Image (cartoon, rainbow, N blue to C red; front, side):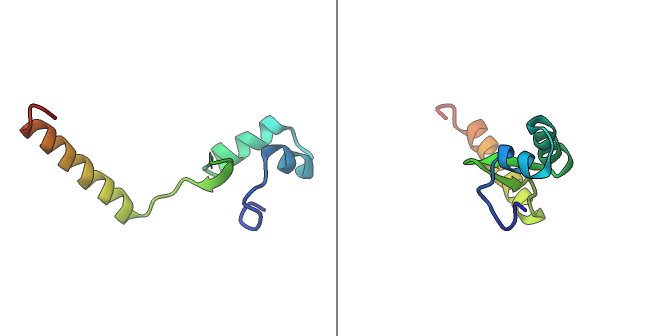
Length: 71
């Protein structure tokens, strides 16, 4: 449902599914691993390259902070 209509709200999905809003929110976040971004639900998955890039950038920042007392 979310893949075809990105701007669905928890209220609309709960109403269409015949379940409570709290149950709908729990299913979306805990079971399907989704979270809201700018009022849209998106999967919380990063590909391995993105994860490695975040690790590399974080290490670079730590190294700069250790080398520069003013940073």
